[in-house]
Length: 579
DNA sequence: GCCGTTTTCGGCCCGACTGTTTTCAGTCG
Image (tube, rainbow, N blue to C red; front, side):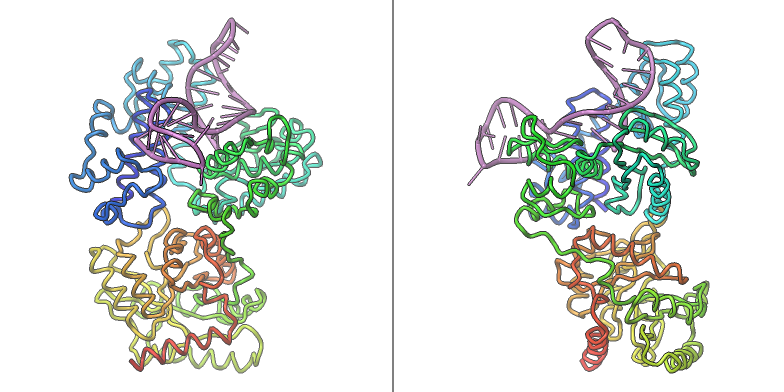
């Protein structure tokens, strides 16, 4: 995708300029532009044709010119020029924590460092050479940074980070000096992947509280320990930054360290325009503190309701909140059921009955059992005969359970085959309560072909939900190269829903695509794709992602009570079959 | 390099920690 390629080039441009010691605001402009492009749903090529590139926040005359140049030539002269003579690997090294452009430049000049191998090799030499500004500690710090960098090439999945953080926070709360402890940073914003953990603690003796925290058994190594901040490594080599603040600053610190950086810059600019100042200690007019204890006060003084952390990405949330247009975000409690779950019949680990019992504990009105179709051989997909047995089995269970919630819906996760056909006959599909159609094979099709497969599936009157629409696996499989606008239009016309798959490995649709779907008036289904009873809980990650995408309950079919959902499921099957 | 209900020029968020610094630069978030 051009968007990502240009974003990456701008990001590298920022680093090249930093390396060359250029004006830091110019550098920031490139960084901001890169972030902006990554958030963009529209295709840059399309926007360029419509002469709308300069409508993108952070893109002005120069950068839009570079984007056009890239679209036409696949290159940006300016970047080629600036980066001449700088090895690409050298630029990569700038993401090593503790190694900034200045230090790298020094090492490059003094020791001809051009890649990671050079860097490792020169550290001993640098130590021996005793060059100015290079003590033993600094060398050590860079070495640690290299380890951390190599380990964190892959960021942690939210589903991995969240339980770890909850564990650590529980331990922190047991320390007597610590009155409160909460996660901040990208974890609190529920980003799909997490670099390191940020935690804010409330203590009237922060220095001692941090010392206590650094002694916790979970802590493997203490990297920095100050009056207000400690940095430690916990098990798994995960870095945790802990900030200690007194009560009057707790809300301000939480706000500040939750970010995102762009959200905070925007908010501070807004405050400054009104003669106010925000920092991690509070909101001030001159020396007078107007707020700080409570996060909500800060937003309130700026004329906004409290901002859900998931929205804080500077994607228009500040303007929306200030205009009273803040979305009423979906919450976990809004969900009335789950429309995508597996059992031991295909590749699940829990039985039908176990899954239903767990869904009952979760207070669901309905649970759809959607095992795989026969083409999914590795997942023991059900052929027509086994599906027939399934009908029988579920009927029996329904009888035994009587009127008890949840209602058990007979469904299937049906493969969309390489030719666009579905893996069950229409006659079979017509008998199912819920049909989730999804691509599981032949991902390498060209953009047009793969989009065509999905359009064919959406045109089938029995399909209710398009499962994990882009097929991505976070950090391991790229999303399908889709014409998403056409898919949105088709889903809208067919009245089908797109899934927000809650599996921590998928989160598919992602936040910005989900937002685009809602704006296009397309319905969504938030599902767990559970393969065990424990995984039914994964649906919460789907809700987090939905919240990041500004999703309101009205757009999500499984917020509906059974009576409403059942009509929708039937109407879709009948109405479309008739046409 | 972007951006503008004060501005088309002159701003651009703000503070902590570390190391090796005798007063501050580099880095980070």
